[in-house]
Length: 228
Ligand code: IPE
Ligand code: IPE
Ligand code: MG
Figure 1: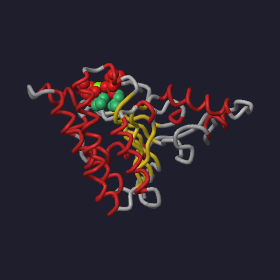
Figure 2 (figure 1 turned 60 degrees about the vertical axis):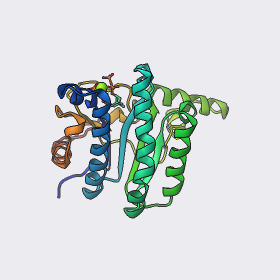
Figure 3 (figure 1 turned 30 degrees about the vertical axis):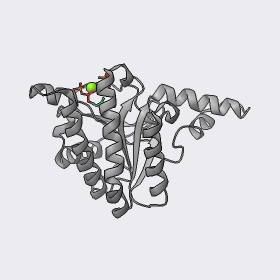
């Protein structure tokens, strides 16, 4: 049996390029990217992944045109409402990573509802990284730890991250060919394996996910130790 990662994080990139190559507005790419998210959630669940973190919107994505930002956040809301039945059916648990306080209230409400409605499910965990930045998460964690008046240690910071009970990602995938981390899971990804796919996110299929997992299965993870 192939070694399947327990936790996969995905930087879902390339929606804009997908649309631009077709002479269509960037928002069409986000719409198509949403369909891919649904497809890949199903695939990951079928392949036995326990945790899937999807990078939906970064703390830096506010720099985009207001119309694009509003479109993406509107899609997130639609997704949460439309997919809830599917999540219930497959007993998937929705979780959130990011700065909830910085989200528009009408989005935050839906995110909270999806998390609350699915919190007792024992299926795959789908972590939505939304208004998420790795640096922001670490700063918030350190502030929480400092407020508790304790000595700051690595363990204490880790315990104050957004989802302390979620294991660190084993595999982080980035689509659309860019070799950068763009502020995703900076703390948790310290010993993740990385996989870059040239395919744009809207074109991603279960085959691409299987290729990433196959590549992961061939890696030798050492965590700084000497492996005989
Ligand atoms: C990823 O696709 C979606 C978000 C960052 C929200 P992009 O919109 O970044 O697509 P490209 O990189 O411009 O092609
Ligand atoms: C990273 O993609 C953020 C998400 C996928 C949500 P970006 O497109 O924002 O990253 P950069 O700007 O290319 O680094
Ligand atoms: Mg991009």
